Image 1 (cartoon, rainbow, N blue to C red):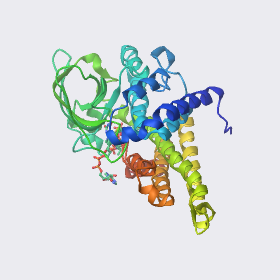
Image 2 (cartoon, rainbow, N blue to C red; image 1 turned 120 degrees about the vertical axis):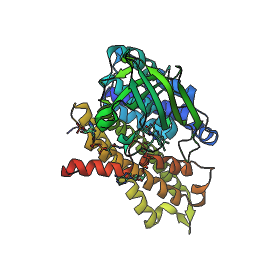
Image 3 (cartoon, rainbow, N blue to C red; image 1 turned 30 degrees about the horizontal axis):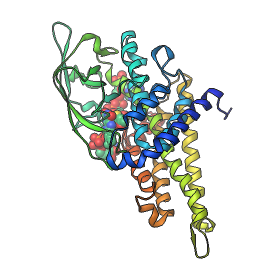
Image 4 (spheres, rainbow, N blue to C red; image 1 turned 60 degrees about the horizontal axis):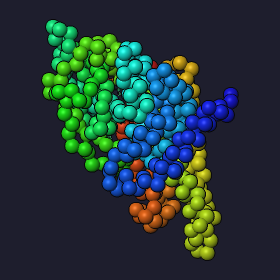
Length: 382
Ligand code: CAA
Ligand code: FAD
C-alpha cells in the first residue's frame, strides 16, 4: 500500500490551495454575509481545470483521477464551503453523469461548457414531497408522437438553480414502473417552459444559490434524453455515489479549517495563567479532532481509490460521506467551544464553519440514508 501522492496530484492540490487561500478565503465572510453568488471565483476555478477535474482533456477538463478530485475539493472547501458546493455539483453531479451515460454530442456540448467554467450546471432530483424517497417523484415527462417529451412538475432545493445554464433533470416517463420508470433529461434553462423560484435563505453555504424550479410544458427533444429511457434512477444513484465522495471531501475541508484555527488559538489564548492548550481537557479535544479528521480523509481517499480502479464504490462512498460529515459537525462544534465567546462571534470564522458543516449531513443523502445504504450493502437485507 502506497500512501504517497503523485506529482500531478500534488500540483493540482497546490493550484486549488493557492486559489482557495488567495482569492476565495479572503472573501468568504462577504459571501456568507451577503449570499452573493461568487461568479468571478467560479470562473477562475474553471479556467484552472477545477470544474472538470476528472473530465478528459478532449472534453475541456483536467483529465485527472478521483484522488486529485478529493485533494482539490478539500482545499477549496477549506477556503469556503459554498464555493466547494458549486464545484462539487459541476464536477460530480453534472459532468460525471453525462460522461458515463451521455451521448458523444452531449459530452461535446454540455460537459465542455461546464468543465471550462463558461456555464454552470445543476442536478435536479429532489421534489417538494420527495427527498430521501427519491423514486416518489411526480415530475412527468410525456412522450409525444414526434418523439419529443413534454415535461411538467417541480424540483426543489436545486443547487445553482438560480444561475444554471444546463440542468440534468430526472422525471417520470412511466410512473407505473417506479424506479425503472424514471428518465434523465438535459435541460437548457433558456428554453420556454422553464421557470426559477426564489432563492432559498439558508443556515450555511449561503453563497451557493439554491431554488425551486418548475417545468410548464417544457419540450425536450429525443436527443435530450441522457442514457436510455427508464435508466434515470440508476444514473442518479451512480452519479450520487461520485457526489458523495465530493461532499465527504467538502466536510473534510471545512473541518480542517476549523481544526487549524483551533491549533493556533489554543497556543495563544491564556486562562488561569497558562495557554488553554496545556489543559488536558483541551488536549483530549485536539486529539479526538485530529483522529476524526484523519479517519475521514483516509476513508474518502479509499472511496476515491476504489472508484479509480473502475469498481463499484457505493458502499465506500457512503461510509466516507457519513464519517466525514459527522466528523465535520463534531470538529466544528468543538472548535467553537474551544474558542469560547470568540467562537460564537462573527469576528471569527468558527461559527461559519459550524453552520456550513451541517449541510454535509443532509444533502446528497442524509446520514440516515447513508446508514441505510451501508447496512443494505453489509447485510444484503432490504
Ligand atoms: N448505483 C446503481 N444502481 C443503484 C444504486 C447505485 N448506487 N443504488 C440503487 N440502485 C438501483 C437498484 O439496484 C435498483 O435497481 P433494480 O430496479 O434493477 O432492482 C434501483 O436502483 C432501485 O433501488 P432501491 O430499491 O434500492 O431504491 P430505494 O427506493 O429503496 O432508494 C435510496 C434507495 C438509497 C434510499 C435512494 O433513494 C437514495 O439514495 N435516496 C437519497 C436521495 C439523495 O441522495 N438525493 C440527493 C439529491 S442531489 C443533492 O442533494 C445535491 C446537492 O445537495 C448538492
Ligand atoms: P426527507 O426525505 O423528508 O427526510 C426527513 C428526515 O427523515 C431526515 O432526517 C431523513 O434522514 C429521515 N428519513 C427519511 N427516510 C428515512 C428512512 N428510510 N430511514 C430513516 N430516516 C429516514 N437535491 C437535488 O436534487 N439537487 C440539488 O442540487 C440539491 N441541493 C440541495 C442543497 C441544499 C442546501 C439542501 C438543503 C438540499 C439540497 N437538495 C438537492 C435536496 C437534498 O438532497 C434533500 O434535502 C435530502 O436528500 C433530504 O431530503 P428531504 O429534505 O426531503 O428530507
